Length: 437
Ligand code: FIX
Ligand code: ZN
Image 1 (spheres, helix red, strand yellow):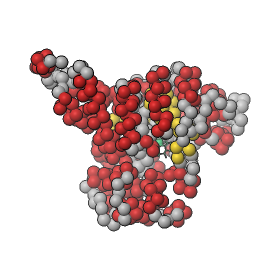
Image 2: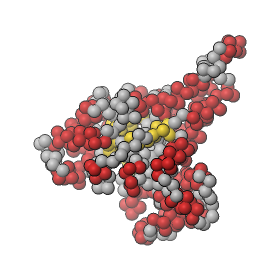
Image 3: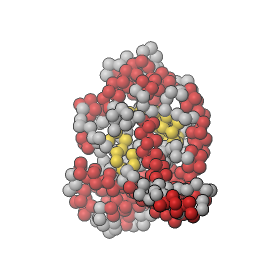
Image 4: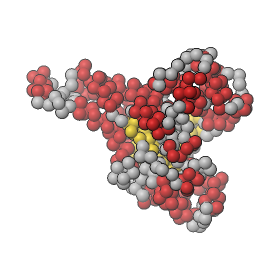
């Protein structure tokens, strides 16, 4: 594009963000737009303030995060059993001493805690956690949530809500003050993955179900799901699936998906989130930290997207080896929306790879990231890292577009970022139309 026409275009469009940017301007504009656009965090394990103690926050929870427990057992002779014996604060002290004092906190997860402490102007080194504990103890939850969301640059989060969780379910049964920035997700792992162990919970609640999922079971599971949709108003239904997941297959899992869950998603016009590729509990001794990853056969996904064209699927796959296939399948099925660099993939070097490939193959039709935060303040570093990684990637793609002969404007960048981190999810869930958000 000739300088002249650029100058003419700039003259009459500077204020509206529609002026063409030169190569040097692109990266700072991308950085600014990423910083100023509040993201929707589409998958977390955070809970609305009125749900009380099941919502984790503060320094002791940050330090005893299962990512750090896994790293503790690599740098300390303490056994998982001995660690479990300790009180929460003692566990946190041990992890701080081992990973932050005796060793340099250079890993992704340890660096995250440093970034949170720094964000609140708290000491990031030295043996004592006294100041940090006093600081967090002094915070009022609602105000603290506001501050944390502002620091993280997010407007709202999607929770993970398990209707069979013995701690959480009674809260929903009793009812509590919903919070506009905490959306519900009806999580169905216990029903879909381990029905034989959990069917009787539904039976005890009066649903006519049985272990073989025969007779009225699928209709009753649909009734159960309707009751919970009524209770939670979820933006999606969700499940994590093992790397061995097959569809179609003999057995209860396929049957419940086909005859209860997916029809229910269609009935309530909400998507199904499939998170595929976990090798559950390869080391049960370290509990939540004991899950691993396995390469999945994504033909299951191919079959589901093809067989249920009316359903929308939010999909995240855990294995690095499955990422390319996921991109290819997303090009084949418009009802498949890839999201996030999940769990063991949430490391800048891998996020970079995955995001570049996704932009090259899918343009802006995916959701780059979610935090998977289990502790409130984690959103601060997880989204800071994402913005840091995405800035150079997005700027690089816009610069190449410019080199190829199409001018790029601030408005282009704004609409791109908004689509990646807001409207793809809003449209897929219909959350703005159904008054859910
Ligand atoms: O299944 C999931 O939602 C996973 O994200 C979690 O189970 C996992 O423990 C986790 O925290 C990953 O970051
Ligand atoms: Zn999760």
